[in-house]
Length: 309
Image 1 (tube, rainbow, N blue to C red):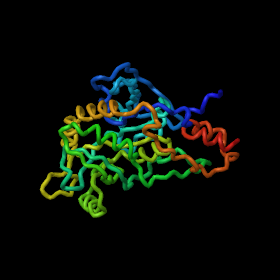
Image 2 (cartoon, rainbow, N blue to C red):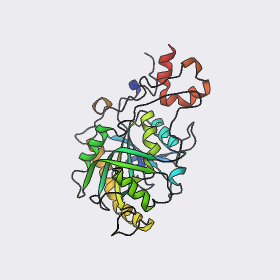
Image 3 (cartoon, rainbow, N blue to C red):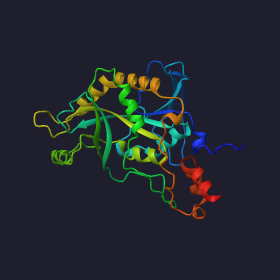
Image 4 (cartoon, one colour):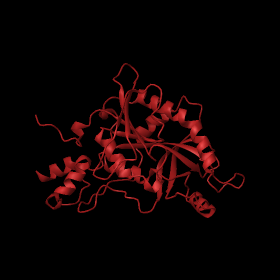
């Protein structure tokens, strides 16, 4: 029997959780068999070394492998626009990740989402500029479905993992993703409110688009840190205010990751990742160069091979 291609469904049958967030998130109780991995990718260097460990599952099931990426680098040294999201996602897939939890700080655009609340967004409005947002191009064309950018199964599991926490959770919300690094003007903030957006952040895109292309399930645990600058009775957002809420919620994020680990099934069949590349590649296989095949092998090599037969 031949060995299945590492990007194929036959090779990706066990759930592995990737977590993208603050550089200290991996220093959590209960994480065992911890090791640090420095990886390279065809798309450059990830934000920093990845931390790999295991968290216990419930019911005597095998431990869950978890892989952590420090989104802004160790010590928070990368602007949102400087994050190499392609390398981060590729590195996660190198380590077998099938499902990704993004832990993010966001501003609130709605009165009912005060600082300290948790939000599970389900939709995005993209206001980023000039960030590489696809693994494709340079001679290979693919179009993935992105109408529902958040994986419903993973987001539902995340909501269940938060059920025992003493925190208010807002589900099914829309996130504006802006370029930054400056915060919004008041006019922009009011515009986004008029569009029906609920929260605003700087890092979920192109991260979520790349996760979809890599066929990784993706969901966000977002913590409201401020009211952006639209709220007449609140002071404008400051770095100090954001950091204060972030520090208060590190333990919450760690507990949530642990609870999610206990609840996740072992096999992908019970919580599938999106098969987004099925019928998505438009380019004739004989036109794909050897260089591009090598760069895209972990993303879609099984599809290119199938097309070649």
